[in-house]
Length: 429
Length: 97
Image 1 (spheres, rainbow over the protein chains, first blue to last red):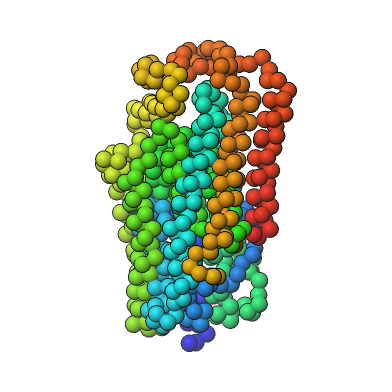
Image 2: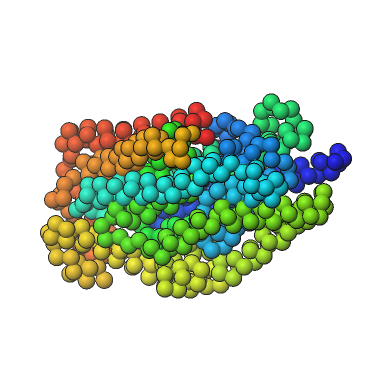
């Protein structure tokens, strides 16, 4: 390969890695901020801004970058710029598809899937360390939500017992603060963890192309651009996913939100401390579900949870198929032209997905509308095309929230049979 | 790595996760409760409460929590803040990889 084509290829890989970084940011905003937005602890835009700032800070906070991608999952010798590029495209496409359907799924799994797929296409099954894939990706993906559900359910239950009988405005005010604090920690953890992945990919590409020596540290522009694009993605906010996590999965109040985010932060940090890394998305989603299970009288929408599980199961194969296809196209056309063609296909696909998302836009104005499972939640909900929520709608959602609080209070009261629950609900109307 | 599931690490995550992940919210709730008073705390209907319904109640009014409650609440919140600070130090030290 000539010097010029190699440089162009490098540029394409770096641009695609930053694009993946961006989708990672906006795909994962909901992990930290969905509950704070749903309980109105923070205004939607304040929440994403806070999360973006913390992601950016987190990316600078720790620079323990390993110049490895999918370490222990694929044969290091099978990694080339083309393979990485195809893998990134697979990850981006899957992130965008799941975003369109409002499904939270792990960005790192999408990337791993893409890379595994492109390695399969490049050198065949011998290039993939299957036991590593099972032990490091598949098993943790099954265990993460189970652990998080357990921790969050216990936490929520304890909180519900301890705050029983307290005035709702006192608990709301207190727990909103706690919620913002714990959500901030999740955002910070995401910044330190996920921005490093993109930095690692870019550093690897630079080393492979000989642009920097093999033992080089991460150049400042790489740190900055990774931090910046992730923060930008976070700020734009994957509103569809935030909506699913905050409104779709469970009915959430600030006590549950605080318990869920604390459980997420604790499980994420402890799991990496004990060398058993779990996906942020799986933990956060599990925690939110757990907060619904642990709260007496709260509703968990198992249909939504089921769709999510299906998406998680599909992440690896689907991103893998895209990655493999991309590598096939690259290789079939050959050389830089092939890579360019795949890049154009990626741009076209992304544009198509964005256009499709505009048909039922979800943004900061309607992210908190009531979830209507019969009509498919966010996908077919009566969201006005202009994205403006009529005042009456907002009012109705306030009413519904008061009703939810009442139902919970009565569920708790009924368990002690202190007060008649029914007439309290009536009075509330 | 030994075996498909690292049971040791998994066990540690579950135990520590339950202690911290469920304990911190519980401590926070306990702290609030200590500050706010008991179930039987007297209530005062405020203007804001009148507008909605008497059932919601105004802010809980207690003459002043006894000192032991204040101290215990400070201990609760202090532990929570300490845990968060530990988390941030852990992140900054590059432990999260």
